[in-house]
Amino acid sequence: MISDVKKEKIIRKGAEASLYYGHWFGKEVIFKYRIPKKYRNEELDNKIRTERTLNEARALIKVKNYGINVPQVFEIDSNNSTIIMKYIQGDKLKDILSDLDNDQKIKYFNEIGRVIATLHKNGHIHGDITTSNIIITPDEEIFLIDFGLHEYSDTIEDKSVDLHLLKRVLISSHGKDYDVCFNAFLNGYKSEYNKAGLSEYNGIIRNIEAIETRGRYIKSDKRL
Image 1: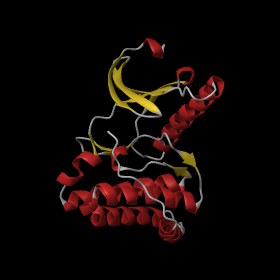
Image 2 (image 1 turned 60 degrees about the horizontal axis):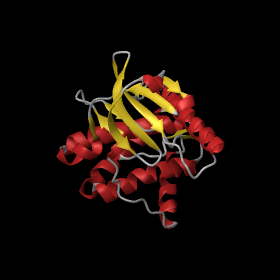
Image 3 (image 1 turned 30 degrees about the vertical axis):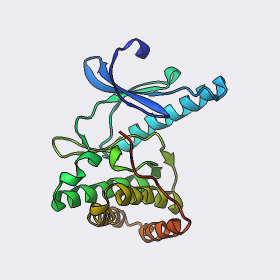
Image 4 (image 1 turned 90 degrees about the horizontal axis):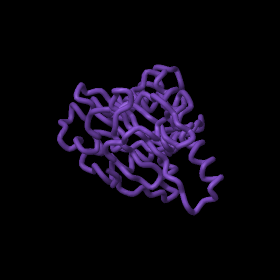
């Protein structure tokens, strides 16, 4: 049983879920456990946590089939609202971005743009594209993590909101790198859409400006 596995170290304790590092059948893994909410009816809380756990795990499995680097799901324990997934060794982009040279920033963000475009053109909205949710491995591979806010959508609005979040995080948390990084991201994003022969790219980008006029504000990314 998952509940019998020793979780060796807590990685992050958030409002919605806690991440634990440990081992599972000899593999280095992360246990993502969705925390019960005492203010909710217990039956409703269990239903919500189960649905969100299954949604995230299924999303990780699906997007991996598109060739996107995400943690491999080893097991889903819906009774305990827990996902066991592969531990990805590397650094959060948030922590190393200021140490990269411009060529590296352009390289990484161009590829990140392609990754997000691949999600979007297949009807997936990540919901939390931040530099904390992107890991760079020692081999310079890019992994996208934390699909806890994942949704299925093909609307321009939802895709624009996804990009708007990244834009605001870059401005607020990585201001001096914003221009280089976001332009590289958009170039990669556009190139992936053009490769697919899809024409909605311009509408998605224009809608980011419309979102900004509504007064949306995203706080600086302070998560661990």
